[in-house]
Length: 354
Ligand SMILES: [Fe+2]
Image (cartoon, rainbow, N blue to C red; front, side):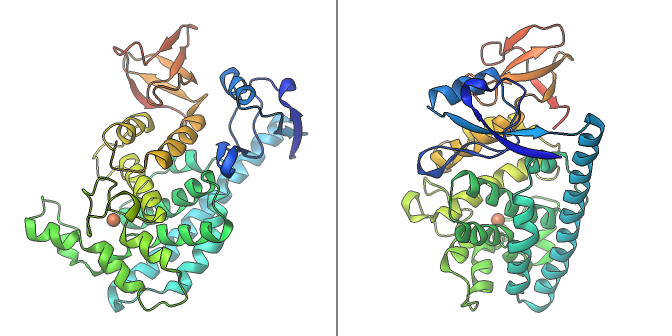
């Protein structure tokens, strides 16, 4: 069985697993549950002045523990796939009847999706996921889960968390009102078609207009998920403080999920190049503070993972130097430490085990 035990920071050692999130001021998550401690992370905890930390303890054989972990993955898969099937049914009804069954989606968000948000290792699960053809359904579900995960890292209240998960789930629901021929067109869209496509946040807002039981924040999250901090987004070209934080959170996870999936970028990008893009190309366009919380926590999940390098070697992610989350310090099989931030000749070609 796995249980949680409180340790003094001076007694912890690399290799231990965090069982409860480490919180900073404003309730922000500094380190999420499930993160494996490295010397670097332990130093950080000391620097932050943290004195106690909850660690996973296992009182069972290794084989039984592995069996428990496999069971947990099986349950996550079952929950994810069941939720995806329900979502398909609701979204197909939306296309047919031009109505969104908000109560059914709320039930899905408050129960099975919240459970997925609270599953430790969900980030890895989403990166491992084989997506079939149903891009829109996978994407809606993943954005909903990731918005919830980022919301938790930001330390929002549980009511706000439920609303944010729901807004993430419905963020692209307005696409159900876009002509199917435009939506599925493989070629580049014409100017007029792009204009219609970029209207989907407004269609989404319209679908929710009469659902008086919904807080306005959910509608704003849907309406504003393509707005950008510098005013370069759509549909209303809002900027900075005009954008509700639900819109800002969904924007970040929307880009992250699109890039880590197969469809939009043709070949699935490894999480490090996605981090690189989010940190550089999106500079000034997405909320810097939220993005930094997101990247820091995603990077911590990637510590200890194995990579294939562009020179063919396999290496482990050891730590980040705080300058670049996309170019970590790695250790190769022959025990060579390489700071990829300094050695730009070597690149990461894939993450082998997420
Ligand atoms: Fe969208």
